[in-house]
Length: 171
Ligand SMILES: [Zn+2]
Image 1 (cartoon, protein in one colour):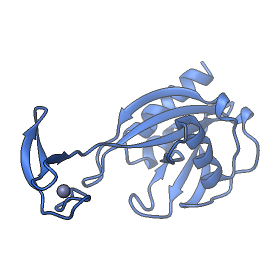
Image 2: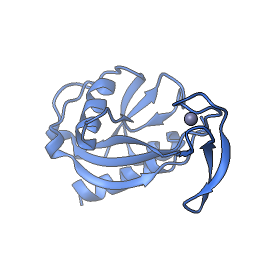
Image 3: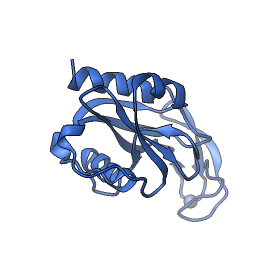
């Protein structure tokens, strides 16, 4: 959400050009209200045949969408630790954060006014322990092949990262 009022003093925000961009500005505090992307991290788990673990989201936004496990970083949490935690929370699979392979760091297409900077990792199913079962925020968990990823995933970063994960782990 773009704030209308200053989060520090409650004064209605105006606008001013700061650092080359038009920004919200508090006339009382005499400072801009910066907008920044929110960091998230996720992991594409690939098995020996190239299938990948997808979760179906059970909550908004993107309720019903198939995606790779991902979520917000907690304060003071390293991205790879967050990715492993989200995997465990959503699917029950456990991986050592040290075993995750970095794929890319990119902005995702915005959802409304929410902009996310996403850190994408790959993990080999052989390095994971546990049996997949839908956990928090997830309505279903399933191993699917590359074709099904293309059919089900709405957002373009998902098949792109699955391809990168397969290339990093299997090729
Ligand atoms: Zn203010």
